[in-house]
Image 1 (cartoon, rainbow, N blue to C red):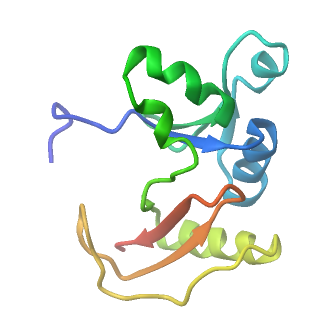
Image 2 (cartoon, helix red, strand yellow; image 1 turned 90 degrees about the vertical axis):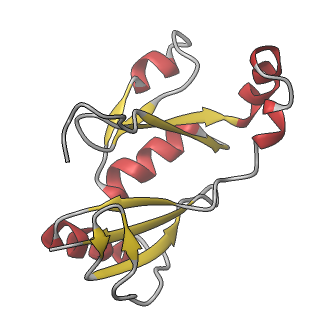
Length: 143
């Protein structure tokens, strides 16, 4: 794969409480929060968390949905309807560490699946979990 093609920049998740959501992603999932102070000060509309050097998850409050209709009619209807799931690919060690953190924080996880197909072929192991707002994540590793 080359680095010149399209890349995933961000995913917007609808959340009830962006600060609480950022806390979940930081403490439980291990992602770096971004713009939390600016959000708390009312300077930005939502905070984010960094998935990797190229991709972030924006944590948009549900009440922001109404304003989406001015940009794209019908867009507000997506609030409260999470995507099917978001899959994150990790190293085997990071995969195991994530599963342990989720369990330590009382977040239910599914059993492992093996050989699920994705962007890099068939994964060795994967599992699913929900965030506090009902968004579904799959974690997997290929190594």
